View 1 (cartoon, chains in turn blue, purple):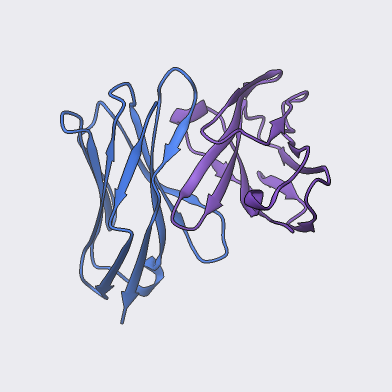
View 2 (spheres, rainbow over the protein chains, first blue to last red):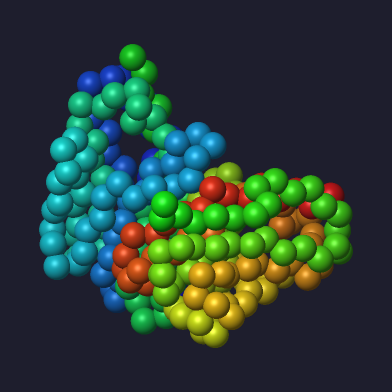
Length: 112
Length: 113
């Protein structure tokens, strides 16, 4: 089955700096890679996703890159702001069994 | 308002006392799933359902049951809860299965004593 590893587990950045979170997956059949943001005490919410036919996708200050050959994908947050502080989860899906596999999460802390 | 609802939001129970956590969505989504969230382990899928009467195991199904008799509802049943099932549980639904946006419910905090 699919296995998703996410690094780092915690990330502290100064406001205005960039943050990068990396995930690797094991199943070459996976073709959908979403990122979810979970603020303290709230439910996870999708912030960006990428499919295997695309190498990079951007939405304002966030971007995701995908390297299918190496089976890894990354979330990039530029010009970080205090409201970016949250737990971020990567996930991989799209195999024939209908599962969605999440990484263990990255706690991002943006300090003013 | 499009939403996923869960009840109860908080529950403290004792070992062995059967309980059900309800999940309902009003978006006509075919795909629904249950996750548990534990510190350091992320979100782990318990069960998922591709459609009415179609359910399948996720990564951590032991000790749980589900049913999907109607499209909108996907209850999670713990027949004999144990302390290791103390966790934060999320229900989610999506229109396009595991390759589409998952809409999460507000979560249910379960404590089994």
